[in-house]
Length: 186
Image (cartoon, rainbow, N blue to C red; front, side):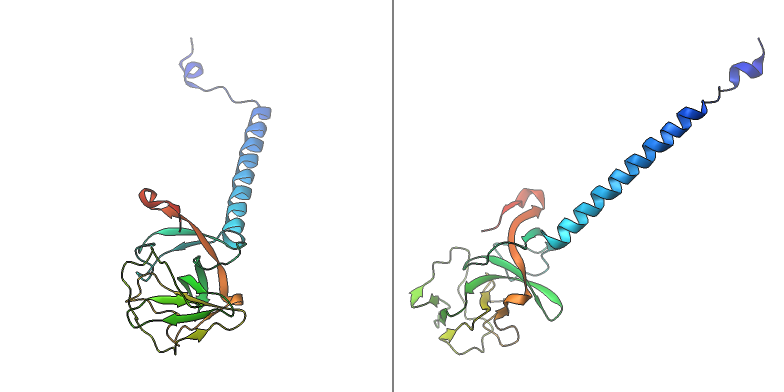
């Protein structure tokens, strides 16, 4: 037996090479299409944000990754993402258009004459506040506050003010990372 003939590999038929190339191209095309769909969904329907500050503690902590629902109706108590000075801020909706918000000296919030039950707030505080209370929320605007009332800069301050409808990105609905804190945002 010839030594060269046992060490040489038999060449693949040309048809097998074409079939492999076609299958590889099809797989790559499917992966690129899937990636494009994920990117489009994340940008236009469910944007993903990373929490960078502490103004929403204890509800949200720095470093958590959250999912936002752009199509959700915004209601009192919802946690929303919105644009402010080319940044994305995350705060809780306290008052909607035409609501009357009042902030008492101890940091208690009244809405339309009723004290708000706010189990998500760990410490009541007046915080950074230069807004005159009681305050009527203008039409097409939302009064927002962070859950960490002593450190949050929000609608109580004229530097943020009320959030215009057109600046709202959407309602935060789900914490996705880290996995041990994943779940619905309340």
